[in-house]
Length: 424
Image 1 (tube, rainbow, N blue to C red):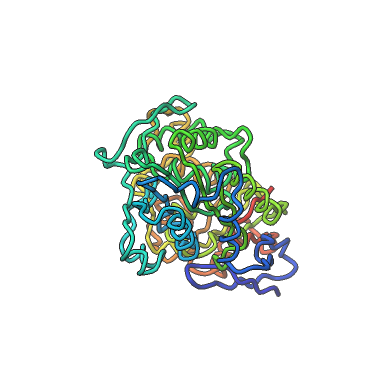
Image 2 (cartoon, one colour):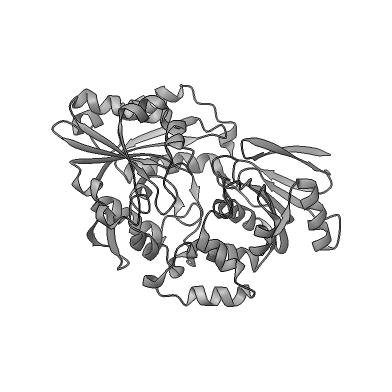
């Protein structure tokens, strides 16, 4: 019997799987990668050796209004490590700079003060100017151009008015943008809902190139990089983190060149080969990425890449915040026929994309091929409304999976952290 600990919220669940059924446990090498320097030393080294740009302290000279785009409460970016060093580097070159930290919520809800304190620590929240982006606040949005795909590029006014725009973030596999980080700070990070909707259209999401680890030919990435350039995002600090959310690698400099360097490192650690199985168990890596069902879809895509068609996906995501998207939830709640739902989504013009359509599209894609058993702390009714099967333990989920498959001997592949790996 193999006992496997899987992240769930801020804790773990144990899976007890007979050795005869266990195909493989897919893990990122990142879990075992040990940098030779501390988190702070890695970030400082990146700041001192930027890729494709001068040092941030030199770029900051003469710049009065400096905006630092930072991730929101849904991303485990170790800002307590990164942000103080970025602020120090800026003020080394320009002690009198007017600095604002712009929280890139994209289309998420606003980040609360408590969440800001958890993210940055009380000192930065008390002493620095922080503004939380709102994708619907027309008074704070400005059109700066047209995306390669044809959509309006509308972003936060603070970024447009900045003398210097920079960002912090982290790089991990992203289930349709290829990778997080870099250019995503602008689109979707500080873009208007109109712009995000157009970029996340059904045609792009359906592309075979809109997958984790894919950049070449990815239509969403093309728009995102263009948006970052158009917004004059001149400098980024991006990190790669381990399962403990600690910095193990850092890059700084040009929004594309530094990001490429970070992606190359990530690829060397997190690409794994799929091991097809009747049952695939996946997670979202625990808190803060498994707070709702919406985010949980990401971890399902890793299981999708290794489960046999007609098999069962068991997804662990605490989902203590519920569904994570009202329209996302209602679409499933009001739908009986998933095939017709998919037909409707694929027929939707780019400019008619609605909130959360992309997440709906990906979940429907998965559900049309596989049954999904969803382990969470949210209500069974909500899970059932979303055409999934509720469970509250791995043992219960496996029993239900056995019933669906009609046998107790189905092979199982475990994806220990579905958002930190590229399953090929």
